[in-house]
Length: 80
Image (cartoon, rainbow, N blue to C red; front, side, top):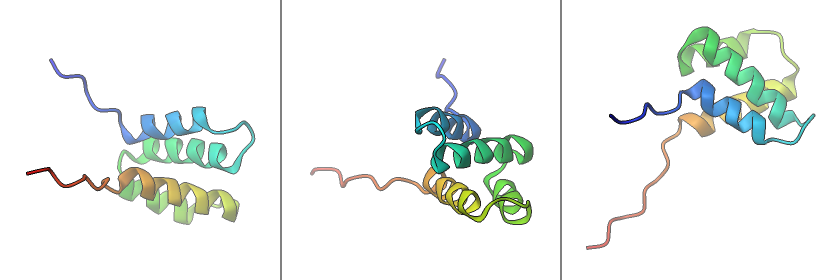
């Protein structure tokens, strides 16, 4: 049986764990994890991030992280 892919919230928590203690990135990743856990979707998390009163720098960083986590990575072309 294939293991389930980590959820968006799990990935945000991992970014939080890896970020420097006290950094904006760490705070933003924590906020993002809570937003995704609360809404269950990237669209819902984005809505919460734009409407909930947050410091601008944390909001901007959380939205940037959400974009990073939801944008598919480009795959290199397959060699022929």
